[in-house]
Length: 418
Image (cartoon, rainbow, N blue to C red):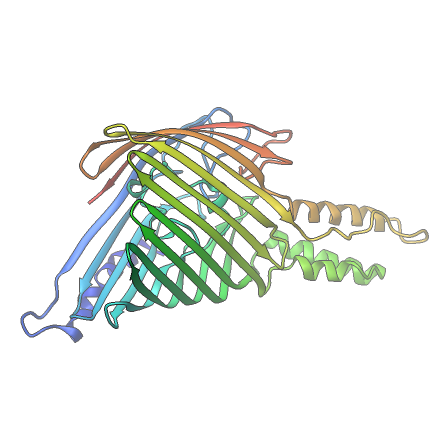
């Protein structure tokens, strides 16, 4: 999506407002706000690259600004007493190895009454504890969301409709959000190829309870995933079906069907909590991903603990991701006697392809960092991560043969809002 389109989209509230203008003015006012992060990220090795979720190139021993930097602008307009419009554009590196502009939000919001509101358009997909502000560095304690959890769903927004109900029970504020729609996103595969994933029949439930310094959240998203433009995946599935048919091996076609990501069911369930009490800051999240495809089922979690001392907030975080289910590799180790000589070598190539495709991205990360709120609406952060892959290269990319980690990542970021 071009930057010109983002600029045009930001003027949407002005165009829409004429139909809902009040008698006192032709065009309702538009409020502009924004956020950004200017960051430098570097590692201690060139043997693998460190990325944020869904990036195709990352940091090595050569410092890079693109891993953790971004810039967002949001326009809000109150069209009348019950209707408003919001548009948000975001510039960052996501999917492709260059800064690209995307339309993150673009929705109309109708206030039905004091408790119920409806939105239609493009909204953030509420699958995480900090879904709505995961890209707003200033709003978060850590320099970046833990990849172990936030890599599990590569979809950021959805096009559709949602409803939010808000209620107060004593000192507790409750909210329930339910959305339906579809989504599409450009993603980078483990081999850095650029593909597109579609999510259809999407439903998302987000429940939040707030009481003083404590926030509790439960979320659940379900849908059908479709990925059809991956050359490597299509080649492997075609090879399995052709080999199975050619040599009469009946296990290969069902294996191809099981690995395929064509209209396959997927779900993501998460629970999270935050505490901000007398200087103590705690944030934790646990998530489960399930799919009926080559994409592994996973359990992931993190816990961050910090303590505010004046304008400084040092913190520690531990995060972990583990695959808990995968499609069984049913490619035979060898062909029966009497088969053509090429049969067994072909099976070995296909078996290696299946193993590579469904390789588990198991890893843990220990993080030390500090946040310094040295000026209004501006924060400086420094963070060091020790990334430990297990049984492979984890969530790192472009690893050289023999690399098994660990990898140390250092970053400094200036976060701001306006």
